[in-house]
Image (cartoon, rainbow, N blue to C red; front, top):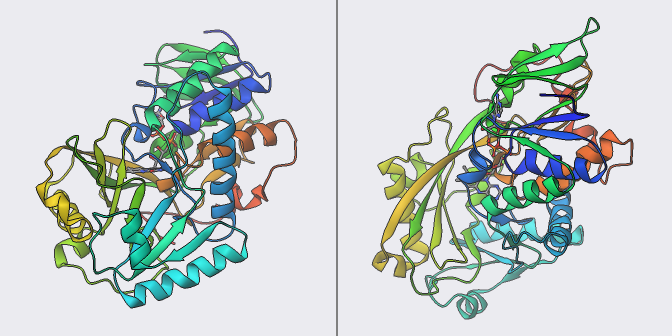
Amino acid sequence: MSSFDVVVVGAGAIGSSVAYHLTKKGFGVALVERGDVAGGTSGHCDAVALICDKKPGIDTQMGYESIQVFKQLAHDFSYDFEFHQPGSLYVCETEQELEVASEYVKQQQADGYDMHLVGNYEMQQMEPYLAKDLQGGIWTVPDSAMNPLKLCFAFVEESKKLGLKLFDHTKVVGIGRDEKGAVESVVTDKGKINTKTVINCAGVWAPELGKLVGIDIPIFPRKGTNLVSEKTTKICHQKVHEFGYMLSKFEDINFKRNVSDLVEKNNVAFAIEPTDADNFLIGGNREYKGFSIAPEIEVMRAIAERSIRFFPILKEVNMIRAYSGVRPYCVGHLPIVSEVEEVPGFWIAAGHEGDGISLSPITGKMVAQLMTGEKTDFDSDQLKFSRFKGKTFTGFEEE
Ligand SMILES: Cc1cc2nc3c(=O)[nH]c(=O)nc-3n(C[C@H](O)[C@H](O)[C@H](O)COP(=O)(O)OP(=O)(O)OC[C@H]3O[C@@H](n4cnc5c(N)ncnc54)[C@H](O)[C@@H]3O)c2cc1C
């Protein structure tokens, strides 16, 4: 199967972006995917790139810079991935929630982000179908949306123009190493590819590839489910979600919501977003249940219950299907973007949990910067695999 400067494993949002950014720098790149492009988590997710769902600091910084790269890509690519920047609305149900949200906004504003509190009246003007008894919310101007499947295909198709070779339906089963332990080839079920550099972009399956070189990668599957509505009236104009989303995503954010046992038990937090096709994606939840992506009826019920609380009109709308995916949750919540010191030539770009679509452009850019020795836009030390040195992980550890 010949030789390449770099072999990228996994054609989800991360791998396809990494492949694009490297081909653009002039590297000879092979992208190896065991199934179809976007067949993993990147084809079982929502469609937004937000800063309002990130923690203040590097998390938000990466989200914001990624949106800037998205804008450039939407301009440069001839493949349309439906990028647009409608903003997003967080809604708060209780006074306590609004207090926590206000503190969050203050921190983000102090860092210069265009995010502000809105009152109930303002929210009703924006979204007339919203429940009338809410306390207020957060309006975030830079927040964006796109079609995640088309995004992956856009990266791949644009990279092919620059010389990328895609090997789909090809599974990586081994990594060849020289006598010093450095990478010298990638072994697939269709043959061997010679290379000195392999980038593990296998998302939630990244630990399987890690095992091929004897390392433990602390990434675990965190399941989420969405309902898809029939085509219907314009229920909302951009992403609308409850601020309680932060509770379900981050374990160290605490406040009490007025929710039923069903909603609590299934860690459901309401979110809705329109698609270009006029269906609505309605979620969501987070739970550690292994790799199964079969949607569960109890979770669907809990999502339906919570969504009617915020948009009572949804009681009248039919859902046409549901789907689930597994987010690649990395211990500590930040992704891994670095070479692995003990295995020269083996890189990891994985573990983006609920942000892999959003952070795909900046991750690809960062890998290209690191590989060419350029200065990265962030202090990439926080994203190094070596931060886990000496630690062992046995299960779905949280923070
Ligand atoms: C319900 C839900 C909603 C979400 N909503 C959003 C959102 O709105 N915005 C956002 O930013 N993120 C969202 N996410 C998270 C996002 O989907 C993920 O972070 C992202 O898709 C991860 O991309 P990836 O490229 O790392 O992994 P994947 O897309 O899973 O790609 C990894 C690929 O590696 C391949 N692979 C694995 N092993 C091998 C092997 N041995 N050989 C060859 N190929 C291999 C797999 O087949 C797969 O295609 C959501 C996730 C879920 C579940």
